[in-house]
Amino acid sequence: MQRIYAWFEQAVIDRPPIRFAAHNAEYADAAHLKDRFWPDLKSRWFDSQFQIEFFKESLRGQQFLAETFPVFWPNLGPEVYSAFYGGDLVFGEVTSYYTATVPEWADADRLKLDMKNPYFTKLDEMTRLALQACEDQFLVGYTDFHAGVDCAAAWRDPEQFCTDLILYPDRAKALIQKASADFFDIYDHFDRILKENGQPSVTWIAIPTFGKMHVPSCDFAAMISTDHFVEFCLPVTLAEVKHMTHNIFHVDGKGVAKNLDYLLQIPEIQAIQYVQGVGDDQPVLQWLPVLKRIQKSGKSLVIDLTLQELDHFIDEMKPEGIFLCLDVDPDLQPEVIKRVLRW
Image (cartoon, rainbow, N blue to C red; front, side, top):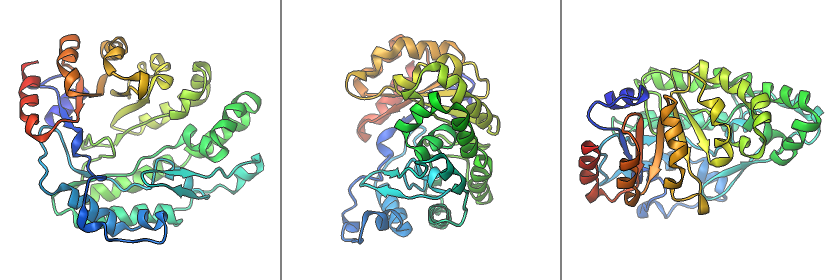
């Protein structure tokens, strides 16, 4: 935790923090649990006891070196925040999707936060059951919240919402405000449960703090211009981050990264998670100029690397403010730690 707090300040105690990403093993083999059957995928996702048992089984025989924290975070998919207000999620094997519920603007009047709806209560139940089951073996976190613009786009339909920003900007802003109005109450509900049980603040990114840790994002920004980002996305981002102790902004690829100049000016954002993308957007080393710009701005950086990229990355970058995420075989992890110590 001392390394993490130093990292937020772009300082180094002895080495940059490292998370060995292979610990994220909720999709790993757990043969003795595979005899479970459900009538549909939603039933499997909603089986809280199974989700927790599956996670606990994934920890068996694992080592957690460096800043690799075992974290169970209740998960019903990235658009669950939208479903707190009505509508349904469609569940797949590894994610879920929200079904747009605002085909007409008048339909937005029906959207109301319901903390007793099945999605909210299931996450609440899963959190409390995990806290009972963790027995100091793992941390319990909160789910992935996409409020604000991402939520409004899900309600309306992302493609339609792109057009709305041009044709109906005032209505779009009103919908974004509706998608933001309850965020602090929702966040604080789950934060309070964790704090009452002696847990730090942590979510899917598996970087805990003792205050309020948040991973703000606006994945929808990849679909719009920078001018529209400033007009529609930036105001709600500024409001979100002021409520938190630590913020790691999730930059989901180059489409979102085009807005970095504005994100890097926000003092409440201490760090950027840069997601390089897939296909031609890999390897990450092609984005070194962007990563150096983030580092030079005074922001810390979360970055995924392969083992083959590590030496080149170390040669090019300064260690201050770097949080490395490496998917490395367990037997190689001690040597990686030694290599980063020499950095």
